Image (cartoon, rainbow, N blue to C red; front, side, top):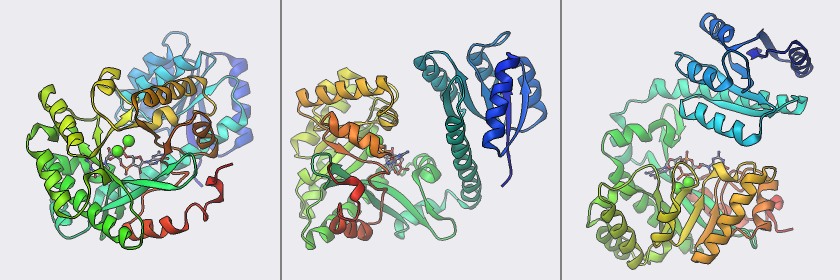
Length: 401
Ligand code: C2E
Ligand code: CA
Ligand code: CA
């Protein structure tokens, strides 16, 4: 495999020698080294690197200043921050980098250990694979074909399970859009959602997801399983006052109770008038639908919004869940969110559960439900039906201990 080209910025000769030894021990890297940010920028102008490894506290130019300059490069490398600074400092530097468009593959405490570097290497491998498949995807997608794909069944609702943390059973699902593209294979929202939005097809997508969800629920019901499904509702669609009535009529006319559908209000958009937001949220609940705050904790979700909207469910964003078993700050945030949800009478769902340790921690703090790759990714309607019957017996790792 092609080695990863890495640029290390390290001012102290002793520490540099130590880090180089760790890189040699793990292997698979070609490493260049410089002693400060100015030299780093010169190197980055001359060569393409897979990874830039730097500290926060550095002479001449600190790590955050270097991040700001690197973000302005045409093809910036991925970044790993190595520092003895407190973890929260590293996390805010990471957020600075991510919001400037950089990919951050690791936050590593000094001294760098071989295990930490092995993890970083694994993330570099995933990043390389993603970059390769992104190239393939973008080559083949014609935005004009999106509308056609919505009409001919290529754009589909897939379903990701949400399980009870009390008994491990599948309680419900989230509908996630997928495009079964004839040439490029299965495409994810990141590959086509922004093009779909710019074509003004977001409301059309909502109806497509609802239609396919009701069909799926009918198929599962015919096999004896009643599964509530959550559907993503971009908040700005509530600007249309009659949307809620149309949703209710559609669901009822298709023989389904509104309580079997939960709308997830997404943080990424908002109504022009705050009044439309509250009116829409309130009426969705009055019609009997479930209502979830999606992605809580990501971006700028507000506590005021949470306590003043009649939500039935709180979905905690994966940025607060990922690593919660080892990170004390995340653990504290989760404990307080679970307690708050309990007081507000909300069902609390942790998103993005990727490990057994995260699942066990969430169970120990009495979070209600979990969703994530450790439990299962999104699958087609028929594969989900198969999961419903075999689960959790086919997944011993998920059984309650
Ligand atoms: P979301 O609503 O927060 O959906 C959860 C996303 O997290 C899904 O990505 C899911 O596959 C992914 N995920 C689930 N478990 C894990 C995990 O353990 N680790 C990680 N890293 N990710 C996990 P997906 O399907 O790619 O969707 C991305 C976003 O696209 C969604 O985020 C939602 O904002 C949007 N989206 C998806 N389907 C629809 C849709 O039908 N309508 C609209 N308007 N937006 C949608
Ligand atoms: Ca969602
Ligand atoms: Ca979410």
